[in-house]
Length: 326
Image (cartoon, rainbow, N blue to C red):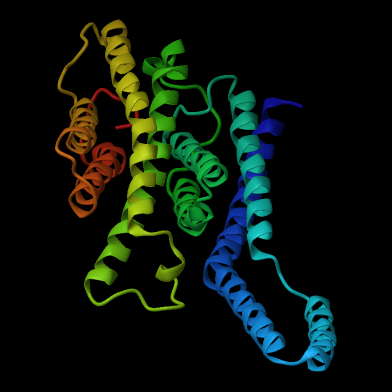
């Protein structure tokens, strides 16, 4: 295949990725909204059936068991959508198509596929989905699926509608092996921070609901983990991402010295990357030393995530600097 054909394949896979992520988003939302409710209802029905059977005599017990068996058979024959497995399957298929977008784009351009804002945002969305899948399988955090898929769909939509660039060579400043190190680290950290940010936002929403009189039984918030669980999940993902962000800043300084003759020049991107690092460092430090947990830590984590988003969107479009993305 020629470079043009790989570029065309990348664009087609992008459309496939977005469609699969949208359907996965719907499936995750349906699982969150109906899946667990149905599971609880089935358990309650089984418990009530056992009580009724136990209260009856031996003869009644036999008849009740036969009736229950018939009802169970009828129930099993009814078509049901397994939203959880469908969501995960579509998520994995979308992730594979997303990977294909990056690989085919890189082959078409004969370079690392994050040389402009379109490719960079596409790669960050891929990192966020990858981080979510790891967290989902390791910590059983499927409840984050709808929120991470929503973020990925929005990111890919922005990338395709406003940031799309045809395949081409990178600028001179990005023509370095450091793009494979510095930018990759920044992408992985940003994707992971996005997952932590989603958990933090859910924590604050559920905590606010509980402070205002409790979470409604049967509502979506009642099917989320406890606020303590959301708090721990956010901290774990942040703890993973923070050293990678630190490495990205250090490697960026080394690259800056090679490209511009100085390690630090107070470029807007450098300043806001460091501000983001300071806030995340304060979040982890406050938890480790001052014992911050819960709402105070979550607010600080959310401020750090807001700084990260401003570093990506605000700095790139509001300020001018030496960085090619700005």
